[in-house]
Image (tube, rainbow, N blue to C red; front, side, top):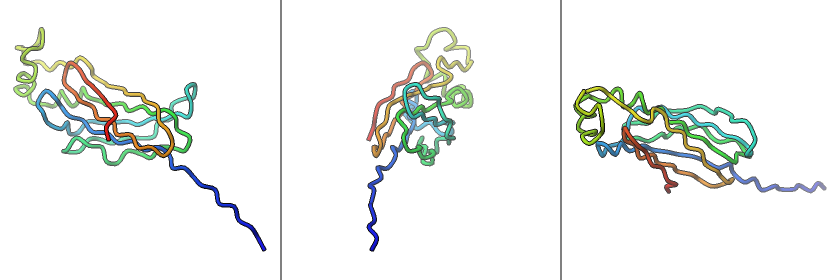
Length: 142
């Protein structure tokens, strides 16, 4: 007769995100998002891969987090997103912006946004990015 021991395994944390372009009140499609993780405050970041936002501004296929992950970083490449927006749409969104508002030139104050946050095993973390050419905000969503 053999006895088997069952060990309960806690699933790793999981992450999702979406981006809303608050300058036009629409989802931000086509923004590249990279995901990195580490397993302790002093540990090296491990690049896990990435995705791009879909037409609804969502990343539905971010890589899974490795077991033992304690910190996650999402890197959003937003400059390319704003550069490909039509100049007229940018000018309207930047009507109160300083300097280049009438020049027609695309200007992005934050070309990249990096968000780092702590995670616990078994929890899901949805981290929305509210974005415009001159600022951004993030929060833990549901």
